[in-house]
Length: 194
Image (cartoon, rainbow, N blue to C red; front, side):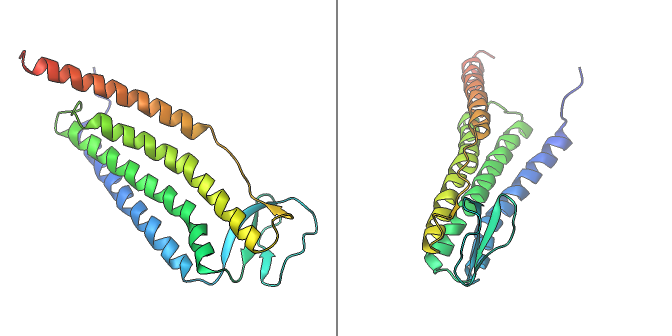
């Protein structure tokens, strides 16, 4: 029977996951810092009233749903809050990729059922939940705060979507973590027998 993935492919995936982790951490920190140096902000929203009247310095960057609402000036606290969802998403990607790399390193070492792997896989599932469900909620709250500050909250609303897919993917990954937990227990039980 042919192996699904050999040592070179696994090693390449491990290094790719490490690079993704580093890149995601850089994006999570660097992009919001850069955006905070800008005086304004852009938020995604849906138009609830046609012909919304906007203050000077606020305009629509797109006219189809979802629209992009651009504000020329915003207080730094609102700009920071506006970047929180973006940063959380990329931090979740970075943490998940780092855990994938660590699991792959134990596979390369010939110990796929390392006792730390179930916890690492559970962290991957948590990263999916945080990046896929928590980050969009943070972004919706930040968008609401920005719209309220711009005094267009009644005319423009946030997207407010809830996705079930990240929950389902995380649940599946938690099942895999449970299987690895059982594999770790079996490995520990059989170590003394050989």
